[in-house]
Length: 430
Image (cartoon, rainbow, N blue to C red; front, side):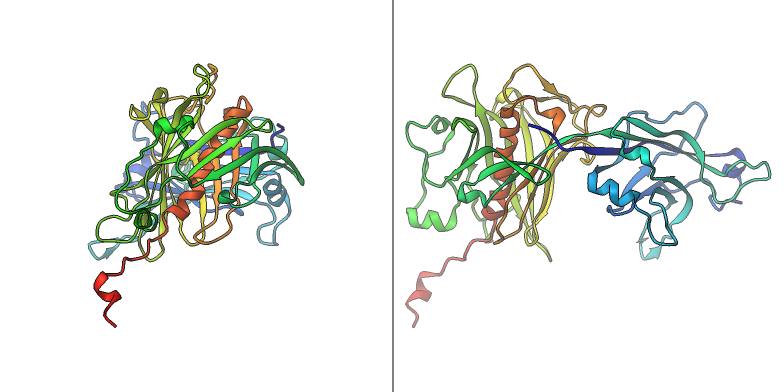
């Protein structure tokens, strides 16, 4: 499998300090940074990202050299767009970091005005497209809008801006997951078959090894269960030889919560993601668990929460890797990315084949792991999956993420509102 070229632009090691004159005075308009500082990180063509900026109050204090405040992932088309000349007032694209003190909005009915501290700009250059690791900036720089008589800036920002190659494998389901599509790898305009996906909604046969994980309890009539409970869904991922190399199946049915007609957070549905056990042929070993539920609001969203299971134990310790909201109407992107998660993972992600290879997800070596783009309710979803090359050591590694992507896609449908039951009395009221 040949990867596609991606570049990771990371901004980290943020810190803000003020000169002694500025700290004690008000010439710069910043009395003593009584409120937290934040920054907006802007790059043309990408959504604005926001991060806090620690205040360095003493010479002994240091910035966190391992902190990554923001990351942008650029593919070849993004780089071309950034390097093309812009309009007359912005001929060159720039990475722009604007630092503010205060918050947007208000408190107790009193508006709080944000105050701009200063701006850092870094022009996009040809070196961005070289595909080599490069540190574009690392250190302190003056960003204050007002300068003292000595010429020193009133505010200084510390940051590290770095480019790193981040090659990825890109896959796509060629049809809806329920139609058991082929999964191809995308390389430009070339599509190369890699896996096949087999969906089933029937109960697991007695000879299927997945039966060891299956719950066979049935409440009420089969017809009633069919209407008020979504269960028995299973997806197997096969390689080109026809061997099953990964699977996902529902372990906790998707059912409406008490008093409503949708799957709520109080009782989410759940999938188990498994791979073949190399020590016991014909057996499966748990790898991850995906929970999903519907969040109601002006615009409904589907929440997908993924845990990595420690040492393959379904009910043992686990590690939260991702919790993502996806628009129920428009769809969206599920991802595992330690730079974008609220809580950075500190444990390694084991290779599904347990080969001894470990894809480290530590704050130092973390970053993007995978993403899966899916469509919303009632739309023909053909999941598009991207995997970081450094987390894939063999075909089986990619397969387990295909099973996870299939589970995410099917969760959009599994979380659709249920039809309300008709009361028996109303059926004969006419």
